[in-house]
Image (tube, rainbow, N blue to C red):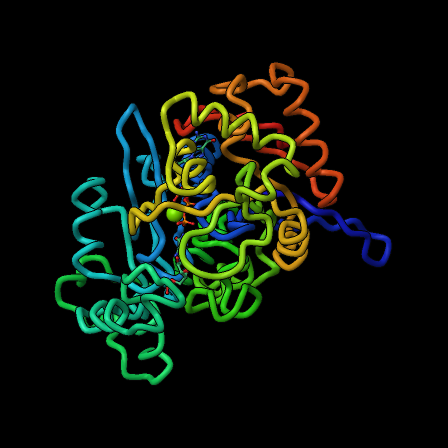
Length: 379
Ligand code: GTP
Ligand code: IMP
Ligand code: MG
């Protein structure tokens, strides 16, 4: 809470204004940028009163490592790592009831997690349709989680809502009332989006996209807050660009172009030395960098950092800060580094070049999968 003073008719009056306390974390490339990891760090570091999940639904797989244990979360906010945080799932998010209940058990979050009563429900028929429709499963290469068909039904206005599902009755709440109430009391709120900008239904590489917009404004709408409430938009990029499923990846590395990208021949050499040799250069790199889809287990396609997409996505998202993850995978000497001054000069140049090209400060750098593997130079 901040106190403001105004001069009215010669008299000074004071009143309480509200400092904006909402941070949105979004993906700036094609998803899997490591939002889960960075959200879990922010949840521990900033101690938000609420962590809310926005985005499409259980097509997203966020990975969190805590105390050596790996959690693959598709419904529960990654902020669950902070025992004091209230956890919420916004109305824009699709809910898979069985998956949600399983994750509540896995994370022991019953009692502090709520679902908006208006979340639409993914039913078995949606998953079957997602997997059996040739266009969706083969051409677009969806995750098969039923999200597209469930959102289509929502648009037809025939989808079931969370408030209709008996198994969810203990979790039902009004997310906008909770979140705006907390904001009104000056409490911190952290919103984690899912997927990435290039998968946006509006701004991505249509038709190879997901079934909704994925930008920060959509994340705010998913939770039920107005844009005026948002303080920071942190756009997350991996130190290289990956994509799972169909669609263009402009900087994709292959046998013919690898020499054009200065860092990559050395990484390929390391992969070969460690005995990894797949059918293509790209698959070899993906296997070496352990780039396997959290939801589908598919190998992700590997590309050099896509500056054009990054610039555009920072613009549309209104980025106030940038987070770079997996720096240790490009520059292994930086694994677990937590101080900016301890970074190698090559990786400092890499970060500076990103700042210069995009025109936004890099304030968070992730140097390993564990929660504490972060360099935090936010003010
Ligand atoms: P979506 O919502 O599906 O887009 O996922 P996400 O952005 O949460 O990313 P996801 O967890 O699917 O994939 C990121 C992978 O990178 C996970 O396996 C993380 O554990 C890992 N990871 C994240 N940050 C780092 C890092 O800085 N270094 C290393 N080595 N691994 C990281
Ligand atoms: P859908 O969202 O399951 O309909 O899949 C549509 C496209 O988005 C496919 O190319 C998927 O591979 C991609 N996609 C959906 N969710 C994620 C994600 O969480 N990470 C990466 N790609 C995703
Ligand atoms: Mg993922």
